[in-house]
Length: 208
Image (cartoon, rainbow, N blue to C red; front, side, top):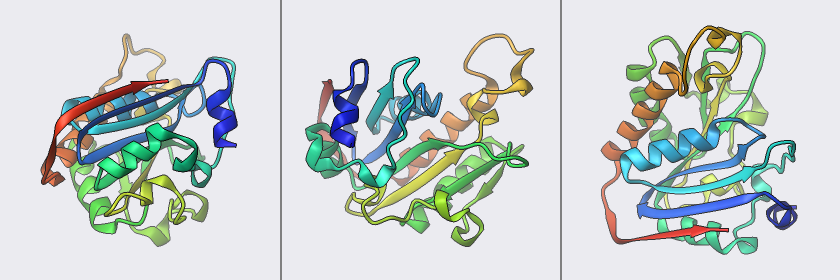
């Protein structure tokens, strides 16, 4: 399924190798809107690595994260080989959870670290970093989920629409990105720069 997705007209794959801290957005573009923008902005601000898949307007194909097989993508394989830890940015929407961010994934110390920084920049939101409080389908614990494949694993970050600047809360707001999304990016970048302990001497870019 992953190879078929990448082969679809208009689907873009982007990888940028910088530090050994990485951000991913598997469902960017028209599928889980703004997740790719958040991942890219946080990576740029923190000089972190980036892997994104963007779907074009009018196309919405949800491939489960655990089916994003690095054997089918040299770009994803290079990213996972390069980074030590990663944060995968996803979007979700559930009633009564418009201000709740979920931090799953197998690297629990990193989840706590990221949640601490996001609480500082987004005091209006609740950060849930206790796995048993996260709905099972959103925990990101599958061993083949690419966010868990770096040497020290990673965190699956689920964002509700409001923090992505989507929904009626922002109907009267002029301009993008909205303040909450800017604060989100700031928190993620701060988490990345304070966690990262090593950088590679080169920077590689791919666009497919």
